[in-house]
Length: 365
Ligand SMILES: C[N+](C)(C)CCCC[C@H](N)C(=O)O
Ligand SMILES: O=C(O)CCC(=O)C(=O)O
Image (cartoon, rainbow, N blue to C red; front, side):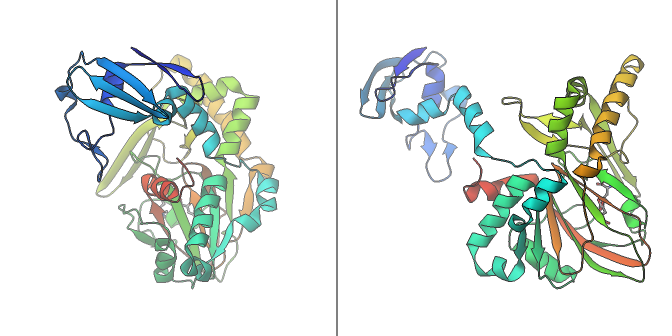
């Protein structure tokens, strides 16, 4: 281990010498164009040691036992340590958990129009920032067609292709073996619990609803609900962060399964990462012994009861011309049963593409 003392802050740090050698930022070790390391880890001697080291202002210079010379920004070294990473991660993405009254107070921050979106990158950045903070935004003034829906979405994100399609349009026509392709009620849920990687975002645009009633959508902030569960029922929170729940989707030519906890938290910070909640698309629940079933179902019921609380639900009738775009890892969505002819168009966005865009725009780390 190598003891570092930051000349400016006075902070000290014990560093593993192999880690430090492996994080040399020079052009010989790191392809500065691709940000990839140029060497195989096995090329570095396991017993590499710092023979000499010195500070010059904010730089730290090392002469290594394998003959290599490195110079480091001291802030790079200190900022790359676990406790600082955790501290930054908890602070950096300032999220606003919401219930109905909170989201209605902030609705002005959630609405964007397609002409604005097309006109300036600043509006795109604001939309992505609101999507990170609140988990839901609207793009208004979009002609109610799949083509214009796609154009609007592609102004911000690439689309995720699944067996439903890249852009999809659905009604009560049974194009897929799923309740979404009916007129029936759908309780609050997140999509794709049966995919290894659930869509990061989901967009829905009601391009037509005629000759009938119902079909209102409702949205619930899973981040707020999970915080409430942890506050009100800590044992249930622990169970739902631990117990693996199988998701499953079966139709002709498709059979998707994925098993994971309903609540996923960051292993370092414990912060909320994802809510995988879909009581419909569940496979056979076979991941705990029968002796633990009662605890699990009690915990799941406690979560669902909070989800179903009136004050959590933001209910609105999606009208032609307005796209809702929400975080499918956080915000639950549902639909009232309906009559008449109702056609929805929309798309998914991969989680990694959502986060990459937010990172490139400097909204998250
Ligand atoms: C959105 N779209 C209509 C294409 C598909 C709906 C898939 C619904 C599925 N039960 C799930 O929750 O993932
Ligand atoms: O029809 C709707 O408005 C939503 C359908 C739905 O929940 C889904 O496709 O996951």
